Amino acid sequence: AGISRIFGKVPLSLSQACLVGSDEGLQQKLAEAVLREKKSFRINIRIATSLPLPSEGDHLRPRIDLIAFMIDIKSKYSLRNVEASLAYVDASFFLGKVCFLVTGVGRLNCCSVEMSAIWKLREVYSSPVLFCELELEGIRVATAQRLLRMLEICAGLIPGVSALYFGSLMSRSANY
Image (cartoon, rainbow, N blue to C red; front, top):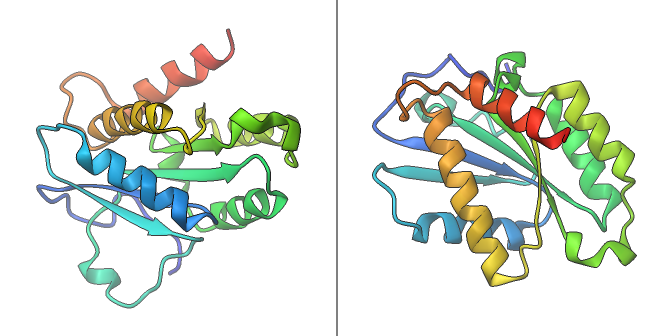
């Protein structure tokens, strides 16, 4: 009942992303950056500190097209929170509709999370990892643009490109 399902909802004329992570301030900044970008489709961004999402109003909630799990490289709690939340995601989401967004990479000298843990998530869940420093406006905008493009693909708005195909390309490019 608490598992986020990909096909359990009817698609609306609205694409929806969910940012899951323990730093609501950075989530809000990123969501605002995505919403400011020029786009040809309507979007909604849900911010959650963890999964599962509250069950109240679940029947009214639109389908989620992309889940971005945000991991703060400086916080082991952030990693544990994401790992615990992954148990509530239906396996079908890992067919290209999940990514891991690792934040705080501009301060690797303060790193609390081992990179091997990040690579393990990528391998176990076959999902791409994006690295960024959301405190910097330029990088936040570039990250917002990248997430927006991923959302467009995951929502099925790019003819001939599926989320699964795109996800496999992203995973392969991270290996080179």
